[in-house]
Length: 131
Ligand SMILES: [Zn+2]
Image (cartoon, rainbow, N blue to C red; front, top):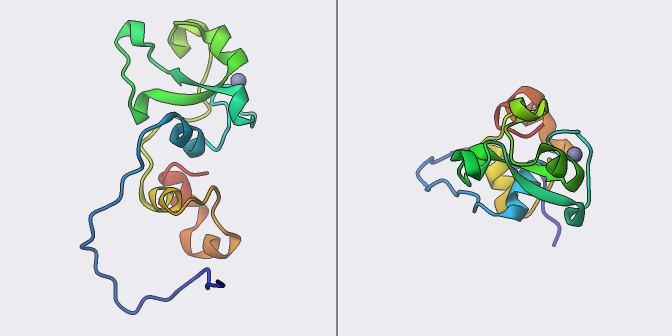
């Protein structure tokens, strides 16, 4: 079924509860766009793992704000250390998906359609953790 990619709402009722992206390994990969958060390269899912920025052994929790997508090579290099201890930099701090990112995930989209960009704008997308 063909549907328009952009709709103009005449009335918007902000009452519906906000959907939240379920926290999982694949949703963390999705949030980070399959990009290792240390070397900035895109990998296939089977080449990726989840890194606890603050390791579990240092009290780090499995929450959006403490896990990032990481390639197996960077994960081995970092080991059970913090990025500071390992001398590794994150390309961006991990965040809970919000706003448009949440919505895209809930409808199974991995990227923002070009036709949406003029409405969302790069600043808004970056602010919502999707750049
Ligand atoms: Zn890497």
